[in-house]
Length: 257
Length: 257
Image 1 (cartoon, each protein chain N blue to C red):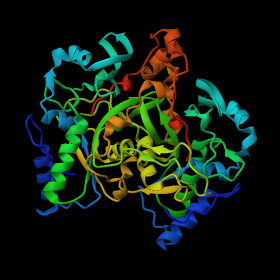
Image 2: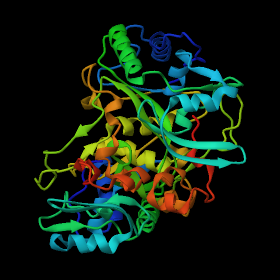
Image 3: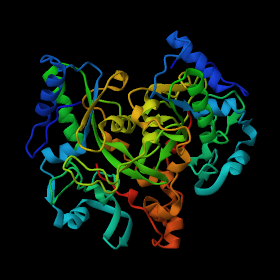
Image 4: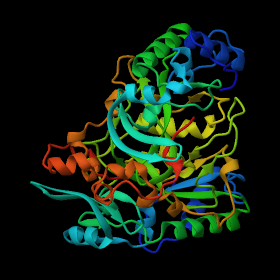
């Protein structure tokens, strides 16, 4: 989606996005949006609208303030790199504190409550245009075991963030026992491919997946956060090793496709 | 993409996919394919074509044979669940050995060399239709810290699997220091949203991302595998904790967007 201007603190993103979709479509009634469209919004512009800027000199303290748990930490010539779980439950380098596409001397914290912001955006766009859309707020993360980064959902409203296929049947008629698709994360990854990292396209529209659109109050991206006790992929970690491997777990760790 | 029949051992997937795109498009010359299209193919049909089936009774031994390193293991009433690094360098539950969408009594191993298969498919489709396409072979994985599964690339040919943006500039003109997009994984995730898990649509076509299409011999999905020494996200693991946090690392663990 073209036409999103540079965002500053206090901007109402419903109005900004509404103006952009109207300008792009020429349609003041619907903004060119259709029932079932899903908008993905880069967290960077949410942080800017919320005024989540801090001075770059205060970056390390900001990371500490956002941190709930340090997953890994390493000193190097330029300082300390920390992979941490932040207050949103997300495991990220530097707690998600970021300096790209920001004014000089400024770093940005992640949005305060991205699920709440997603609900606000979703409700605002649904009301403004009378269409049943969904909203995902995205951010970029590194991953264990894989090179490169990918986008995930850190906020969501009006969509089914997980598609729980357990109990449905495969092409052979046998029940799927463990398949739960991380829909919101896959929507984030999909639209990263068209939004890019240069900052010019912070909003994308996904059309054709209306079956994932849900009621405004459907569980948000917070429900994609897996807590330690049921995360078998985390069992290689120091905490789990010390605790033993005997916590309860769900079987969504497994796979089938 | 509709029209992919049930695959059996020995099927030539170039011929199968060619027949399906011709049937879908009605175009015997190009199969409706265009320069820059990227086809994603579910690993399940590659495994079937390669005859990678084993008896379900031999499942545990098959998992052991595919395993290079056990990341986590847990006994439960139905047996043992193992998260392992397999011979492809992929960290997966049950080494990727899978029983959904397979004949009764059969489990399927992952393809023998998915990058090589992707090159074969890519070369075959390029030659058959005279179009410059890319190919990604996908599989579904669980992830640490996140609920639900997402698709990643386990094989690739004819595309840039990583988009290394380090040295390019953001919207403010400042260099991006750490951004490397896992393009092939995001393509896999994107097309999982339209392929689904019921087995009916094992091939999808991505159009509009021609800038990611590359020469046939571009690095494959194996290059997305991050080895331990430079994986700071893995630093919470038992191995790293025992080894200390002092291995060399690259800074693609960090984020910016």
